[in-house]
Image (tube, rainbow, N blue to C red; front, side):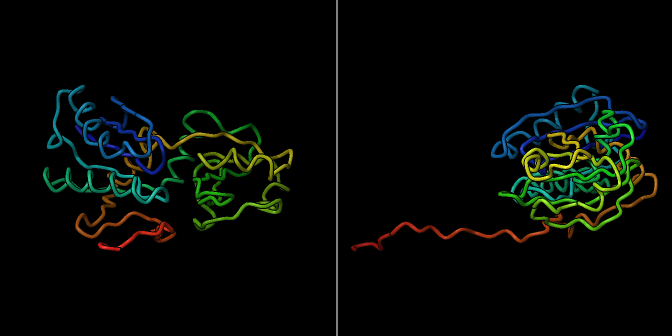
Length: 234
C-alpha cells in the first residue's frame, strides 16, 4: 500500500492528511500562525494513529514549499525533514498556489465559464503572492509578489470570469471591481495536495532532504526595535 503524509503550514491554517492508495483517509487541522510548532507533529501522529500505522509504513512525506509565512513554512519543513530522515523515506514538495487551485477543483469552487484561476497568498498590505492558472490546474505565469491595484489582471478579466482564491483574495475585492472577478477566501489544506503529491510519488520527483528550502519569494527581514534600550549602568 502506498501511503503519503501531507503537511500544509504555509498560512494561518496548519493541517495534515494521510493518503492511502490515492485517497485521503485521515485529516487534521487547526488555526493559529503561532501555534504551528506545537500542532504539526502531534497532528501527524494523530492521523497515523487513526490508521494504526507509523511513519515507516509510509512511502513519502509531502510538504508545502510555499510561498507563504516564513516561520510557518520552516516549521512544516523541519517536521517533514525529521520524519523523512528518521523513516528513510523520500520528501515531496508541492507549491502552495498549486494546492489552492486543486482545492478549488476538488471543492467545485470554480464558476461555470471560468477562464482563469488566480490563487493568492496574503503578503501584507495590498501585496499578494500569486500566479495565473487555467481551470484544469496548469500554471501559465510565474509565481510573483504582486501589489494589487485597479489594473491588476485586467487582460485576464477582459476575457471572462476569473476566480481569485486564497487568504489574500478577499482583501482585493474592493480594488478588482470587474463583474468577471469571483472571490473565495480560504487557506490551503493538506488534503488538497493529494493530486500533485500522488503524481510526484509516481514520477519519483523527490527533493534533496538535506538541502531543500521552502520557496519564500521574499527574504525574511528582521525588524530592529525603535525602543530606546539602555546599556547596563546607563
